[in-house]
Amino acid sequence: MSKKFKFLAFVFVCLILLVFLYLGFSVNSNAVANQNDNIPQKQIKMFSQVLNIVQSNYVDKVPTSKLIIDSIKGMISSLDPHSEFLTPQEYKGMQTTMKGHFGGIGIVIDKKDDFLTVVSPLPNTPAYKAGIKSNDVILKINNISTFRMNLEKAVKLMRGKPGTYIKLTIARKGVPTPLIFNIKRAIIHIKNIDSKLYGDIGYIRIIQFKDHTASELKKALSKLEKEHIKGLILDLRNNPGGLLDQASKVSNMFINEGAIVSIRGRNKDNDEIIYAKDQPIFKKPVAVLINSGTASAAEIVTGCLKDHNRAVVIGQRSFGKGNVQDVIPMQDGYALILTVAKYYTPNGFSIQAEGIVPNIEIKKKNEDNFVLRESDLLHHLTSKKAILQKPQEILIDSSTKEHKHLKNEFIFKEAIKVLNEEIKKCPQSAKMCYSKLKN
Image (cartoon, rainbow, N blue to C red; front, side):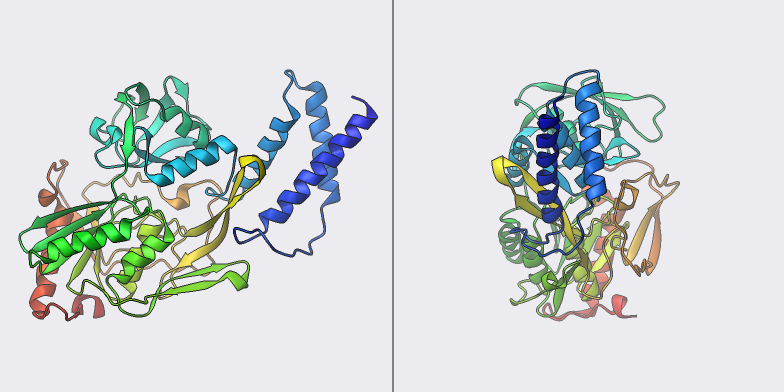
């Protein structure tokens, strides 16, 4: 390699790194921040030297642009599990997912111990119908090992033309041999809300927090209110989260004043407390169901209602994804997803890596504790002075089989019991008196 080319390569790398060092410390979509840190010249020089060695000596020729893009990806992914540098194709894929319809099998995945692990299958999707379960470990996708596979590649492999098949090799706790699933891809129209009526108790499951979740919830509540319900079960189990503004609007439907969530980051100018600003539309007793798959925006709603003594929370400790990402569009279709802050409940409890602890914890008899949470992820962030709360009551679910119908589930029966107790204490529908929570 000529000296002239080496010099140009060095200048190019320096420019690239300076740009991303600058952007990496930003905390908003405009990526505008003044930094006075010294540029690490020695490390930049070392990067240039490694790049030159790879270009000159690696067994196969690799385009310089690919080496640099992959280097940036490595830098960002080493920060935490949720910060990412996206190629144009990956950025388009993310935007498609946010719109709520795409060709795939319908599962939420993350990484644990270098293997892909299912956080939750989305209801009524091919994966759900095939029998994929939370905490299943995906060993292979179409005979391709997933060991140390990044999430972007896994998502790309699982998505495809509707009607085509994908083969998943699954390891499941308690099953001695791998399970093989041949799943037919379909257009995934992700539903936000599902509602039912059980006597005088309304049931609403929020599947995710995407565009229109709040408006759909408002319609579902209005429909149930016409049936003269006396209480509500709000099911947030296996809800992977979504949009902050939708979580805030949903929370505001149940409280009339006070903080919903606070956001605290490195740049104090961007700290924010989101308050309830509208009158609540539902004032009757509420029970919230959660589990280890309840994450992000779903944890914000749970933490808000719990701290305001507005609901009895029942289930298992939630996932613990309590950090905020900014999506920063960049030139040529690239994008940077950067963690810029952490979420805190109205009472100041950190959600990050801690999760929301239910008022009533449901433990399965002979539970194997094999669950995936934020604290299991590589490079997960922690919170200073975090306090892990304790449940007020622990109940044991001794059932050994899975129930096909919700009304037969132990947690559902407990929620009905709790709501009936609250209804007796609060004969006036608009009166909130959660004595169980105020002890």
